[in-house]
Image 1 (cartoon, rainbow, N blue to C red):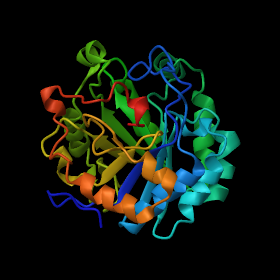
Image 2 (spheres, rainbow, N blue to C red):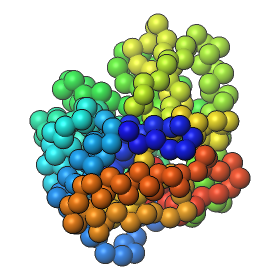
Image 3 (cartoon, one colour):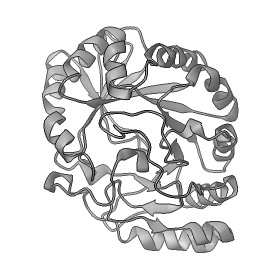
Length: 322
């Protein structure tokens, strides 16, 4: 089992398979994707070595991220590789859903367990203003198809000052009979968004208090769950989650590690640098890779220090899929 010096165990790997994204979200890539290097992303063989090494060290959940992971044409094959790896119990994707209706069946057939969709508004005009695309109806259609296929669906919505009140009010109606979890995520400061962060960041704490006042109850987290505080209500089919990285002790329950699309281990989303695993991935030396992972984990810090304005090497969230 991968365990750090603070006693935290790591059951969960977030694996980026590309840093390319086709959306222009205001809080992430407002000017669109800028290619600033080669696109020598991990091959399927390298991914197989990586996933097997992590599985052998107790990892049970893999989340494939981007950028936008569906921009890789071999995504179904990558899902199948992960799902068929001994020890991996859950394979998830985080996607913007731009082609979800066309793709979801192939992902399900490959063994997809769970799907997170980035959707910051249920209002078509606001959705377009945030993402630069008129794709809300397509995304909603794909979500319904995923639910029909028995895939667990969560919605990621970044809290932004101009939109969040509308999103929460609209979502409460939507969640009445929609079996999804809406996760509202505090905007995080990155290397290139400080003015935007200063203008748009709001805390999730008032929303938490509002939910509690309205009869929502907090749910216990599973060992492989992400950092969201989730809430349910007897009158609602859906759930609401809050991800508040600026809250006290947020990092205390950290259970995930990240690997970039070029094979660098990031001990935290806001680590100072990625730690290169690629030579060992290319060699296919499983034992050496596992030993290196155990050794590198000793460098993991107690906190991300976001509350002190520290953003590390993360210039924007598309670099590692958030």
